[in-house]
Image (tube, rainbow, N blue to C red; front, side):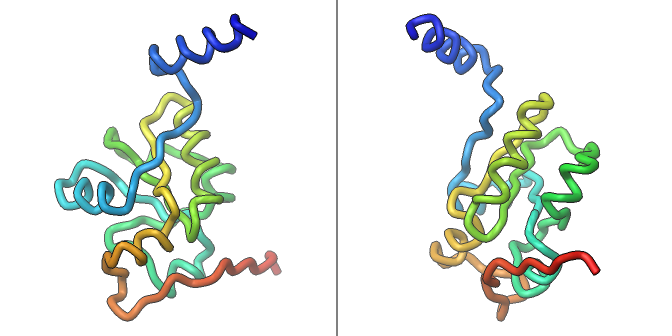
Length: 134
């Protein structure tokens, strides 16, 4: 047990953990305003259309799992979904592949609860919408 704990501690200290950090809605808003992060919405197209964070690109979690691509950035990539449940594993996978990534803590729900604006301005946080492929 002691060996496992020290292994986890050394990974955390050396920065080799494969667990992505989370970022709060307010911190994300500040960092977006300063141009420090790139933002990826991993929800379904239907959810994305109903309301999103301005400036986010849309790639579903399934698309990213099939082809993570480069996303063409060296900035921290912040992934989000409605609640954080779908975006956290995507962010973890990016960290495991050696890239800088985080997940929005509480997802778009936390963003809206913090009083931050959605795009479009009359947008909404859509419930989880799953449509099986036809």
